[in-house]
Structure formats: structure tokens, C-alpha cells
Image (cartoon, rainbow, N blue to C red; front, side, top):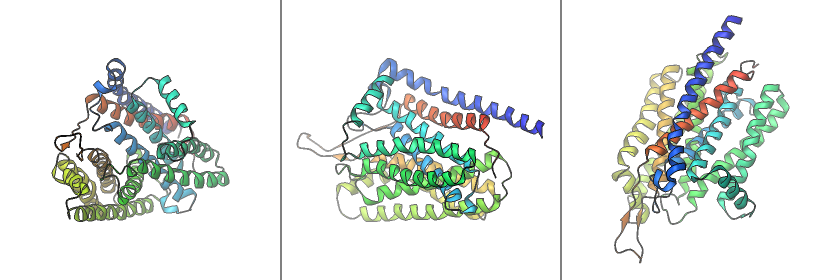
Length: 380
């Protein structure tokens, strides 16, 4: 038994080193921002001010919220079939949230002291009509709540964990909904200013949570007491969410095909324009069709098939966030100050890509350090 624990710690040490190496890839992008500035380092512009890092922020926050929902279904609402190592799920949720903050920090593109000063100055203005202010407020509460939930799970304080889980669940959903509202209230961007935009965000977050939970089971290769039941329950949840997401894709495309509105032009840019390959191949085929096929082939119980479906679904959700956030900025701009209608362009730079990869490494690094030094495997 002792030898098994030592072997597990040695493997965990290798994972920490690997995660740290992946995280160090971000040094390239960080150095570019320090020495050359954000405008030179990123592919953003005045017409397209939000790039890969903001997309990554929305994606990682979605993973965090989705994992929180999975954990809440288990130890708060007592859906035992969703019980997959609550401590690990909570730690992964916290790690993803920190990685999201890492991305938004560098998306703003300034030194540490300036960013802190800017945030405090803006936050203390108490702009209650600002969606960004409310989003910041919710995440000010959500981050320590996640840390508290991990602490209570480690102490096996079931009563306190129940209440912390309830509050964390509500705050997390409200925070992510408010994040989507930051985009959706912008009437100047028709692709964002729709009712299905926020719904798509929430569905994507739940898909990510289920997918990461399944991948955790697959990569850890440990035997859960109710492993088959958990795999089946989460994979069926992913199936229903993918079907719901596909309905949104279908009806959005159909409805916007009628008329010559700005929204129709925006969807045309996504379906037939520069984002066509991303939309059809990654978002539809890889993100919806392939996962559904794998889930049915694996009969919702085969972990390799379900894990592959989860990985594909994660890719699909990422490109869904990318296409919606970037595509919303590529709409045709018409103004009395412009002689003709213009279309924005964007492609992420190596600096942005390196920082995004670094966020993946940061998620892994925080999780593996916690997994090594905290009593994560001593669950009931």
C-alpha cells in the first residue's frame, strides 16, 4: 500500500513538471506585451477589440461553472450518480477560474500594479447599471466560495458544505449569466443582442462540466464505486445538452436566413464567411455530430468512447464561444462617416496563442499541486 502511494506521488510529480512546462509557454506572449505593448502583440484592433484571450476567459469560466454544477448535483442535491470525487471536481473548478482570471488579466494588457489600481478604482464607483460591475461583484464572491467549498470538503463538514455549495451554485450561475449579458446588452452587435446568446453560454458551460468530469475519470484511471452509473448519467446529460444546443444552431440559422437584417448579415459571415470552417467543422461536426455518434456507439457506458465524445464536445464549445464572440465583432459596419460598408478581420497572434496555452498549463498546475499536497483521495 505504501509503495502504491509513493508511485502515485512520483507520477503526480511528473504531471506537475509537465503542467509547469506548458504554463511556461505563456512567457513568450507575456514578454511580447511587456516589451512591445498590447496593440503590437495581439491581433485585436479598434474594429475587433476582443480576441482569443477574452474567448478563453469565457471558455475557462464556463468550465468552472459546469464543474461546480456537477459537484453541486452530487453533494448538495444528492444525485449520487453524479458523484465523481467531489474534491477533485471542486479543485478543478477553482483551477479553471484562476486560469480565466489569468487570461483576462493579460487581455487587458498592462502591468500588475496598473491592473489592480484600475480594477479597484472602477469597482469602487459602484456603477450598479453596469453588467461588468455586477460580473466583477459575483466573481469577487465566487472565488473565495470555491476555495471555502474545497476546504469544507477536505474537513468532511457535510452541513457547511451543503450551504456553501448552494450559495456557490447560485452565485456561479449568476456570474456566468452576467458575463454573457456583458455581450448581449450591446445592441450594436446583432449576433450578441439575442435571447439565445445567454442560453448558449449556459448550455456550453454545462457541456464543459460534464466533459471535463468524464475526462477526469478517464485520465486518472482509478476505480470509482459507482463508476459505470456516473459515466452513464453524465454522458446522457451531455447528450441532451448537445441536442438542445443543436436546436439553437438550427433555428438561429433558419430564422436569420429570412430578411436582410444586420443579424442576417452577421450569421452569413459565420456560416459562409471567414468563420465558415470553424463553424461547420469544429462547432457542428466535431462539437455536436461526432460526440453524439460516439455516445451512442459507446452506449453511454464505454469510458473511452464517452471520453472521446467529451473531448470533442469541449472543442466544439470552445469554437462556439470563439465564433460567437469574434463573429459578433465582424459584422458589417455602416455609418455616415464611412464611404462604404466594411467588414472587420481578426486572427490570433502567437502571443495570444501562447498565453492561452499557458492558461491550460496553469489549470493543470494548480490542480496537480493540490492533488499532491492535499488529502484528495481520502473521500467517503
